[in-house]
Image (tube, rainbow, N blue to C red; front, side):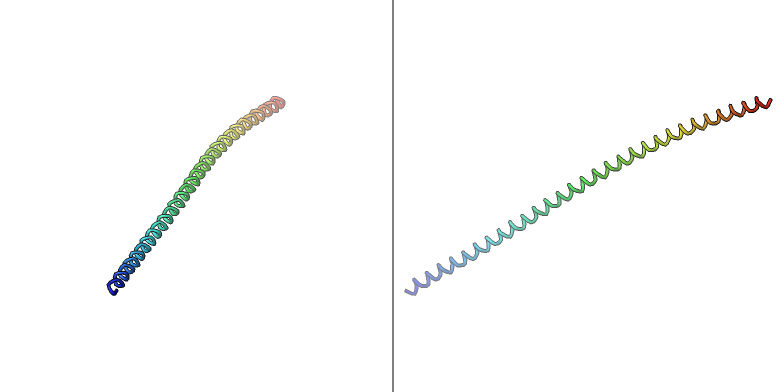
Length: 108
């Protein structure tokens, strides 16, 4: 009888330790999966932030290109205005010389 009880107790203790080890293994696997999920989420967020940074960089470069084009067009328009001003100034000089000659011819 005692041997029977001891064997049952031994089997039950063995089953209890086996169950505890399986529970610990399950917990370790659960924590491992949780850590992998957190790592995956960090990776996804990192990639999203890099994508947003890349888009900001692209938009910044596009805005710099547009600013450069506006500057070029502004300088071209200023050159055309200066050319037009020089042309009008030369016309004014020729007109004033014509009037001056007309006055001198009238005086003589």
